Image (cartoon, rainbow, N blue to C red; front, side):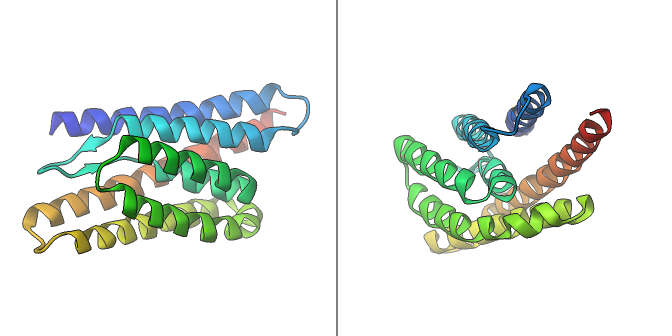
Length: 193
């Protein structure tokens, strides 16, 4: 259990670090030129870090928070950010190997063709709606992911349900926390300018 918490906190640390780097970079830039490139690059780096240090739940179930930077980057940057992140995710997942690359490819394809369409309405929303929208997408994604995994098992055991509950809880609560913190920091950033 300690290993699970340790790697979960490590994944959250990578997410926080990427978010803070982005905020520090845009704080000191004179123009908004290149923000899309910076967002795509930082999201990709954070995603690769999360994938490099996955969370070992139990009985061989491995999970990471790679889709959080993918979803956040796609919502804030639209297709110009989502497509490079999608490419990095699938190339790195193929390099990692294992049987999970097929569901990962299909789920990331679903994300890249749906979430960037919400980009404009997401940016026009108030902070609470942004938190709810991003968290709802994270919840939908992880629920879809767990559902797709169930097709790879001949029978669903208590271990599977335990792992599924942990995955759903970890990704959704992490997204709520990060989005609430991000909205707070962006508000603070706007007030200090």
